[in-house]
Each structure stands twice: as C-alpha cells, then as structure tokens.
Length: 81
Image (cartoon, rainbow, N blue to C red; front, side):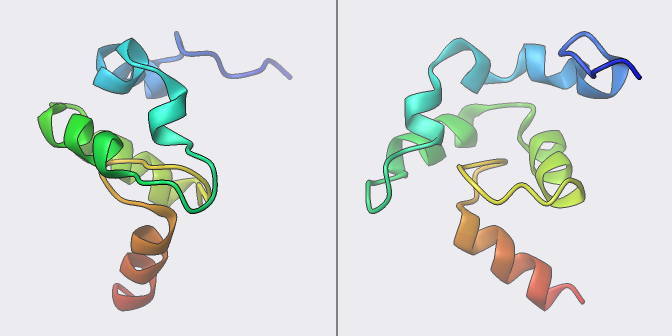
C-alpha cells in the first residue's frame, strides 16, 4: 500500500500553508513552551481552515494545527459532540 505524500491531492493544501515555509519548532514546541508564535503564523495563513479540519479528522494529538493547540482541539471535539 503506498504511503501518502505531500503531493497527494488530499494533502495538497499543505504546500500552501505558512507553516511549511517556517519551521516545525514553532508548531511542535517542547512541553510547557509557548505556542504564541505558531498561533500568530496560523492567524495569517489562508489554509488554516483546511489544516484544522485535517487535524480534527485525523485526531492529531500533538502540535498546533489550524491555529489551535492540543488542548483547544480536544475541547472543540468535546463541545461539538
């Protein structure tokens, strides 16, 4: 079975994402570190809705996705049930 790559159609949005042009250290900080810079970058990103949808659909548990931290995504999942 082939492995999905960034060139697969369902992940093509990642090529346009600002995080792809920045660096993972902002989006996957050490525990207890600030995610302020990641959220600032996400706030400027036109791909943010697709990113958040992907994270929620794929149960991403680490990092900042679509402008939300792990805790914020968990809370969103809980309240949307």
